[in-house]
Amino acid sequence: MDKDIAKLVRYINSNYKKGVKKKELIRLGFDNKLLNETKRLGFIEIWPLVETRPKGKVIDANEVKLTQEGFKFVSSLKKDSAQQNTSQKLWSNPWFKYFWIPLIVAILGGLVVIILSNNIFDSKLKIVSIDIIEKGKFPTLDIKIRNNGNHVAFIKYAEIEVLNMWELKPYIVADYEPASWNYDLILPDKKTPYKERIEISQSIPYKGVDRFNITLGFNSTSFEHRVYHIRFRLFYDEDDKLIESGEMLLFIQSSGELHGTYSPGGEFLKERQLHNNRVIVEIEQTKAIKSKSLIKIISEIKTSLQE
Image (cartoon, rainbow, N blue to C red; front, side, top):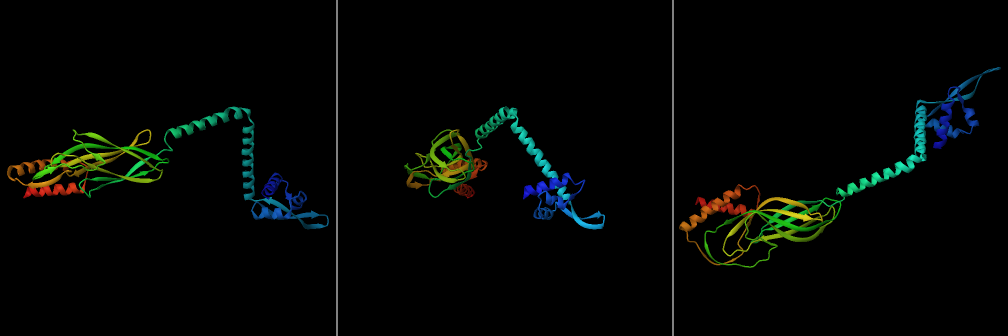
């Protein structure tokens, strides 16, 4: 039907100057059903035609004319035909077939290689959150990771960078016995800054999430507590991509056991109070997230200095 309508409209457009009669169109094979459908679409109008005959004026024919919409339809048909002819000429041109097509294919292939090499289809990890859990003596980093990429991420190892460390001295003398504990990472007695590596073998699917915990501690031969200024990093995939956290301040208690304590007071107490006061001043000047237990210890030390 659409092809017949296009053919009808083209014929009327080609002969509109001399006028096109309905009976002529019927004779050419354009039936009433087609004419009525074309009229319904608004492409043509059918006008009564008065013919002069020897015996007088009678109405015995109808003239078919294109409407404004009909002329627009003809114009669109001409454009489509021109584009089709251009396309046919292009594909039949040997120069286009044997030179331009291979060139276009090569360019598209190169673009695909560039896209792949630029890691469009690659993993991309993001740290959602790091919570400091302090249920026992030793803090645990509860780390949540999301893979925002389009490929599985393979975690290789984590790294704790120790930026600084301070000792907080207790106000008592203790009969202290070192104890062995299970840590994910034992922070050694080294000059800061230093880095410690933790092996992790874990995969995160694309658009997936995962979490893991790292418990930190230190072994000491004396009764003391420490504050660590750290940063967490995670390395993943073959090319060692990395993500890192902000800086954190953790309070870690001594791992040993006390069998007896006493408080000498006097100069011993004064010396340790002054030491701890200097330490908390430095800690408070450090821009990093503080653990809850550290905030509590700082408050206790300040209170003891005021007494």
